[in-house]
Length: 243
Image (cartoon, rainbow, N blue to C red):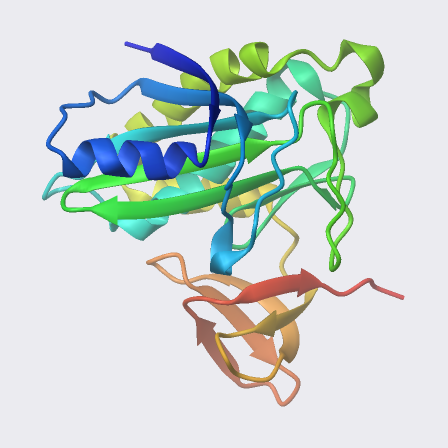
């Protein structure tokens, strides 16, 4: 059952839900916290997430059971839910692909951000979607639903109502069909096998190679220039234009 709690402003919806979980508050799955404006939004790798009013900033809590797939693979669940949300009714005819581990690219530009944070057996899943505005980023192109779809881009409320339903369906599939089904779904919607990627794993220098799929736990497989295969568990990925 979906329950959407909306507040006018906060620092971070993820931080708010983490604090509530840590205080022992029972937050059922399907409960979403949405802020009309954030003052301290965060993204992956410590990046600041710009949060202008009109975009969607929301978080929800997932309870991890002993028989669930690894918690970090919820990043694939979340990316697929965002993909489904955009494809279902908002940007049905616009090219959308997924980029490892959880980016959603609309015609090559970033439209959303995902942040997973854990407290005990609870994972707080934070999602930001550019609905009305596409904040500038120094290292990548960005877009928004309104930019891609004109004045019919919808509202943050509408986007969240679709997202909550999509996320619940993807979460159920992750649990009932096993991780391999979710990874297969993700791979079908991602950059093709053989795509040229540049990847910065942690504090290392960037490496380049070809996307060779995912391993059984969702790590990225990168075929290096010398033909060797490297397994990447964390890092920042950029696509290299073909030509």
